[in-house]
Length: 193
Image (cartoon, rainbow, N blue to C red; front, side, top):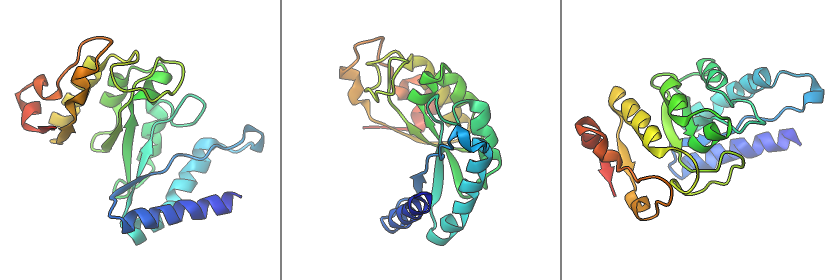
């Protein structure tokens, strides 16, 4: 039931906090169309109801942009949702592959996320039709553009990046771009492993 699922989410928040996690990803709830309820409004209430547990357990919820059949599939809906939620407890998690599935250039989505809200990335590639979670550079996403947009956000908001460069040997489509090579300010904010 939905009540049981809600309790599972709350327990997951508690266990994640016990394990030392600062964030937990909680996807929006799919509301059946026949219910007649607004999925966006329903999820606003859902997320806001979890704020008490964020405070109790000391954990933040990362709200992720979603696939085409779900809400939060455009940058406008994503930002509208984040605007209604307390930034102390709710942050943005950007899923690169989901944006691409929604026919939105990931670099455009990154640049339009509400300032200061982006706290995490779900980095994967796909061919634009199915959410395959392919290793970057093995699908059709143009990674050079994505990394340039991310570099802009990193510098603008004084963020830091840990970049795993193992993909430099796995590039089959396009050319590999080392994140730290995107400028001196980016290099100063990047730890390459």
